[in-house]
Length: 65
Image 1 (cartoon, rainbow, N blue to C red):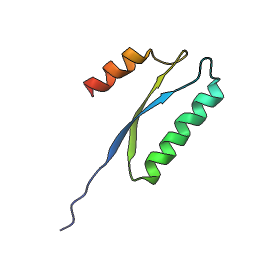
Image 2: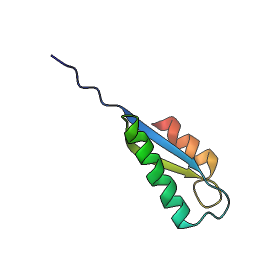
Image 3: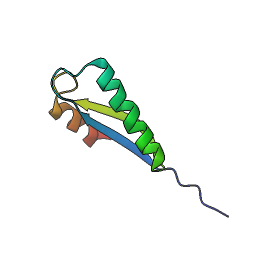
Image 4: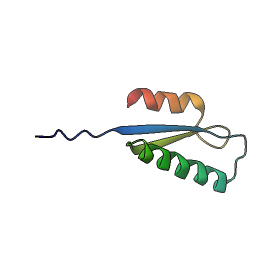
């Protein structure tokens, strides 16, 4: 009987200062498509940089997961 394996991924994107909403959306979509092409389900994306989360906060969140 085959075993079902679920592979999950958490993404971390770092944007340049003052990246536009369009750039941020495109980054999230690209990351989701990349994860899917590698056989992963993307469960969350953390954004870091000037207009995303502070890096310390993002890494604290990742440590909890």
